Image (cartoon, rainbow, N blue to C red; front, side, top):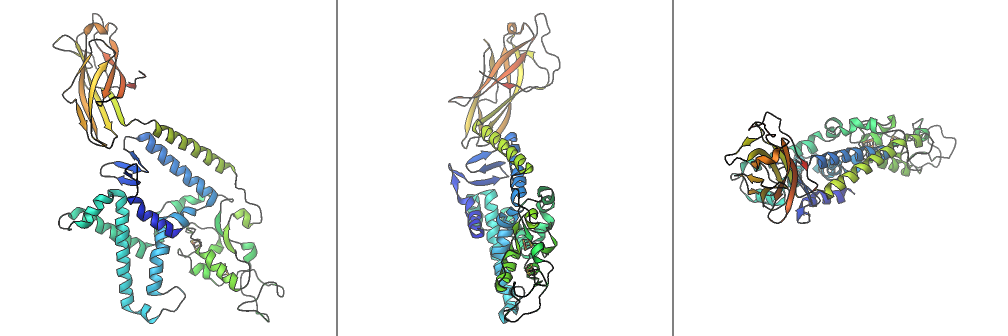
Length: 449
Ligand code: SF4
Ligand code: SF4
């Protein structure tokens, strides 16, 4: 699993879907591409649904399987336990074993740091590929640092942070920096699957007296046992990366890495006792009761997640490739134009969500004699670009017998209508003044026409 994830984390920025990167979080350009779909900061509803979905999914997975993400999927655990820790064991020796002459030499420690640096440099490039894309990354790699000092500095600082995290800070990231561990107590219940020590089987812990025919330690079943199965060898504690004793119960520092399970199983195998003294199980199972998978909080989380996911897909599927918002202009709502028509100033915000440049025109429809005057249009927008432009909608004075008149503001991209909004024009009511009073700027609704 870990090696699969390392390959996935490394290759993901290089994969493309529908001609777009599988994952690209371009913060500078404020464009976030996920699995072939590009999201912009204006996609408030989509981003809110996505964040809500992630949170509910975390709650659901934790309620069912505990900190399975920490132990099996988190890059911190994956790279720490399957890249940095093996390197350290090679150059410095494994805990509890006498280091060789090479492992005690300064050369080995210098070599270890050099290898850590190379790996951290590679990880920094992989990490930044998610934010700048592989094309810009390749450019950064090829250019001399003197020609692009800022990107070089970004890469150097990221490499330094990787070194700090994986060489020095390590599990403290999980314990001190990551908020997930602190929330786990409210997300878990007695039926969540965690890594737990079987107290009923293991206690009272300690070594039994050796009996004739035993190998390293007495075999269970021979003579009456005076202790539980835990021989108090302490291996589960020394192997734990966060240094806790799982026999004292579930603790915030446990990242579900399962190393204590492996260590204890090895001891049990050597003693010819059943494995699983430390194992995956719920607190109810450890107390001898069956574990309930379906429970109220699991059903509520699942239902909320289903609703949020459905809403996200529905909004995504119906999303237009151009966002159009029409607002009233600031200041007086209308004025008499030199030709005697009534002019309303409007502001039009257009977001081009496409990956190509587009040119937009603006027209007024649904009212005879209405026309749009603006120097901003035709408006040219690059991929993902957003602009706010002003325009004046002029309409015949006679159209305002009741003081207002609705008109369709239509945005066209040269091939088709990309936005149509109903806008309420204001004007002098029969016998009224030639310029309007102060009314706040308003937002118009999407036209059903
Ligand atoms: S208690 Fe076990 S599973 Fe938890 S962090 Fe320590 S070794 Fe890993
Ligand atoms: S590794 Fe197993 S036997 Fe050894 S102290 Fe831990 S729980 Fe007990």
